[in-house]
Image 1 (cartoon, rainbow, N blue to C red):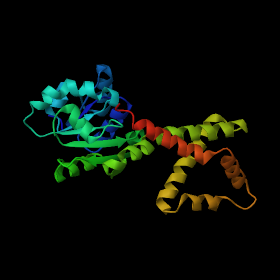
Image 2: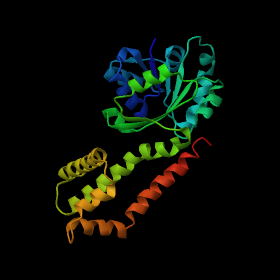
Image 3: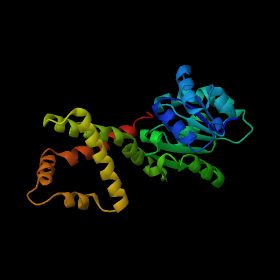
Image 4: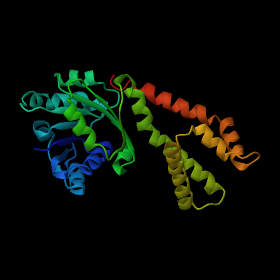
Length: 267
């Protein structure tokens, strides 16, 4: 019997499995996928077990539903019969954006304990974010076990369900926005003569260092920005150009647009 079972071994499911396998015995982890070879590749990498959806639903204590929101109804229809026959307690863990705890209960046709999570891809290297919302049926012991298993993901925080959609949008979509920013900075440096590989290294490390300084100093980002902007210097000219081009407004609009799309995913 596997304590943690992952249905879906795509990018996010595999990233979560990697993070959990760093904290628990991989023998307590099982993975499945529509494409069997993909689950087998993940299992071989992590030292866990590749199996079927049915076996995960029948045996796992924490059942991760790692499918896209549009596919959740079909998955629920597939696993409902097996779930209804279980005698041992289990917890459903949904990673589907836009689906609430009540949506998962409705689709599975049962009042099972449900944990709603919003992870992002950097959890695969222990530098990610996982936002967590527990249904009232989840016990204190189950919460403790679950949070401990995810503790190597990076930042793991409990969040009220009313804020889950926007929190998950920011953490989940943010890596793509940041990757675009890094690529754009590197492109600018390449245009000025810096080799691309070096430009990408410098831009990426600059973002990492800036983020860590913000978190560790506790200072407002505006204060840190001002500290770099010397009077009449180069940085303030770059900041002026970003403001002229609507940089901050574009970033805000990107988050809002992604959030509004999130709200429509279950429809």
